[in-house]
Length: 363
Image: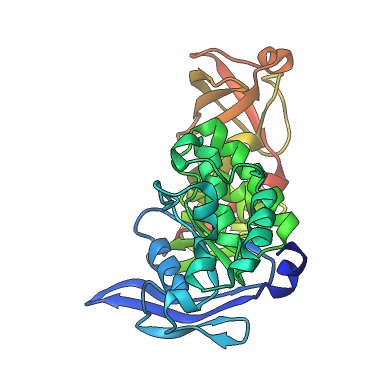
């Protein structure tokens, strides 16, 4: 199985896919090109169209219009079992009365592959997810993370050209979920598999993806690498959805300058010409000035409202002079505590021009 996986991966082309239910457009003219071996996450709030999009890719929902190509093959109206697509569901959809081995080989049975091929494929699939020797175990004897790996092995055993994942980590606790995110990322590197991953968890998408597509109201509003998406959002919706950001209304002065109240802020980025603009202030981008008399570009002053201890960091909420409220993070180590201000104390923070991002209001 492993030796041919990379050769048999396919790119996916979604071309103007639309799905309507009466007058409601669940999916609205969506196009997306996924390269062979790429890990693309579909991220968005509830009702944004993620589930419909995945259903159309998997063959469980027929589009009202548009085309879906897997490699060069048009699969728009092919039934799910003929698409050569592996799927990992949110609840894993494992058969509790079957052993691990029986669950994993089920796709081979459904495709009527010769039984003589099963043992080698089973061993390779279980080794790939580090469950070698678990074949005889019952599903109810496994932990949540192990069940997730069984679901992955089952999705991979028949060497699909594409793997779809529908929020497969959402049922796990936070620590295990974060561990499995890293394991999935490593597994993807090992397989070089083409994966489309649906989630509402932005940190999950940022951790694992080559690219992230943000959906809203049935449309893809932006697609890019995690870093560029986070640091260069297309509009106020994306900026508010990705990262720990506060959006503050500003007024354009010129190509590189805006006014936040009576504060002049300079950016190294071009300021849009739109009438309604917002400054995107990420908590981690603000730095505390130890000297309240500090001078220079992009200084903001205010009063600390609240301090939250969150383990690895301290989160401060600040009401700015002239209005608006932002938050910032300090490390909870010795250095961070030397900069800490208590509620009621004045504070001066700086937003570097490189981190001064201004976006238009979302349509």
